Length: 215
Image (tube, rainbow, N blue to C red; front, side):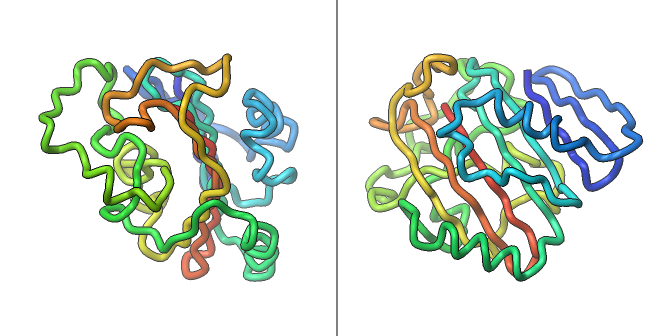
């Protein structure tokens, strides 16, 4: 089951692969709730996430269903002041695997051709020509599909060209026994399974996104 929590308004959205329901919240979730969601994943998968949640939180995704190759924990914080952004950049600015200005077309995007309505990965009918040329991304590393899968129906939550992308670590293969996935038909060899974690920063929008994904 996918669980998508959007906290910019007092609204909790529980997003399943087959339906969407809504429940009103009287207040933002507390620190304990955030910690519980984060701790459902391996510690080395979420070490770059903040220990303290700052308001207002824009959105939080907690998805542990490995059947669709989209396990992930994603936190997006909005209205982040410039001093915090500087501290984040200082923390991770010299400790990354890959850094690039975001561009969907030029990024190695996990599940590039997938959208939120795809409920069965085996049902995706993809002709060979749509698979991207792997050599084009030989010097880059995988990042989430923020455009078409995460937050596809809310432009405010999408990563755009104002963001700097920092892939902190990524590896191929099934590395976490709790979240073993079958080979992802949308990903080329040797990335048919793998994981990626990192952050995306937009000084213009004052937004910081943290991600950890497995497929």
